[in-house]
Image (cartoon, rainbow, N blue to C red; front, side, top):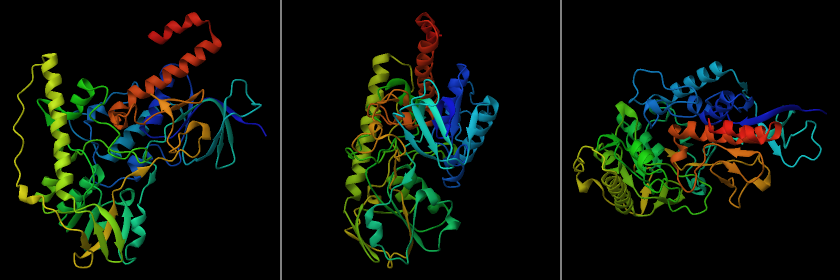
Length: 434
């Protein structure tokens, strides 16, 4: 059986994968994007209705495709990202196969059908594609993570992961418990509370930051002053866990808002401790609400101090820092070690417990012991294997859509270097500088 040949196969049709294909297109190279759903699948079909992008609209840009709307400092709905991505793909005209899943990527492949091929990509429909390069742009958020404790919850309670939450009306009547206080957990708690639902939030480790600080977006400060990402790291106390952490909690709602446990408590959200066990209609909790809130506030304070220091060292002319907003400390109280779901009228649990990256289609030699890709700035351990959309050097800043274009262009340059050295004089490498 023969096989189709494409110089570069990009697995994943989100913003990372399409940006890599676009960056290659700009350099004169063709790539095939293979997507299990549709272009922008996660943005279009796997997020809740009210979600808005956390970074300003001006950052939703792809190679050779700047933001062209009339609200650069606003925050577009998730589905608009998917729409813009589809328009980008149509304008660039590169190859895409939607609703096509990759079953496995083989390396080494022995005798290739096509000269220069290093990988054999097997698709679920039985087709085979050989490629010199493979870019895994699967993202970190592919497989919902639901902890084992969920199995102990009474089956009469509706349980779902954040991936499957759409809006308050889609849930059974009654109170809702959200487990996890990262971006998804806090934003969904806010969404439900605004709709008048009774909401409980089981807290967990997270980071918070003000939306704006000293005349700029907080994410702009992180990008411009702290490129090493030392304050948005992937540690989060999770060690070698394959669960990817998130960046600081922010909301794009209503033009961009701050979000935190005190803010949610002031809106009437009941804060409870981290879930540690379940027995029917009772959840066993760690009594740690105050501790988690204090830790988040401390991390935020450290972040702002580092930004202040960088501003002073560079002599930047910026506004003075606004005083920290005051809130009633009585809003943050420990709940105790138990939550009775029946007594609380809780009929639904939403697990905001993150995602586990699934890179099982890749050759074993590409992955570390924890199942995560072994890479350095997007370069894999196998020749011709690249990644887009993963943390780099401990920093989670590359997970933001604002970092998509730079990552894509870096991967494209490496592929260009390989192609140039194979087919032209090494003197042509000078083109890589332009």
